[in-house]
Length: 111
Image 1 (cartoon, rainbow, N blue to C red):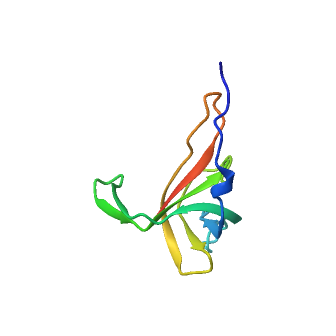
Image 2: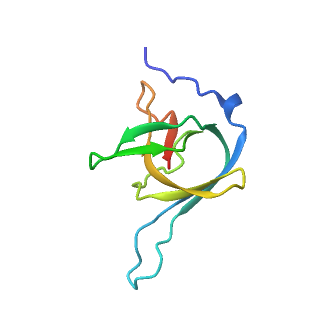
């Protein structure tokens, strides 16, 4: 039996604006990216993770958003503003999948 897992939409209560970096332009100007605005599930429990270079970094929060908010694009970094507070840097983005292969939600790790 192949199906989809439920996403807890009731937990998406924190307003956020997420800006993803895009590809650099040919003339050297700032890269044009994608902006997403909506409500997210925010977990401010701090934790330490190891990055791709083997260094340990402390995460300020983890954000979960229903579906794939960066569909069809590769993650190149970005910034997030949660509830109108200070802007923070995104260090990693993961897309956990349903048993049928579709994206269940987007997990964003922030420092």
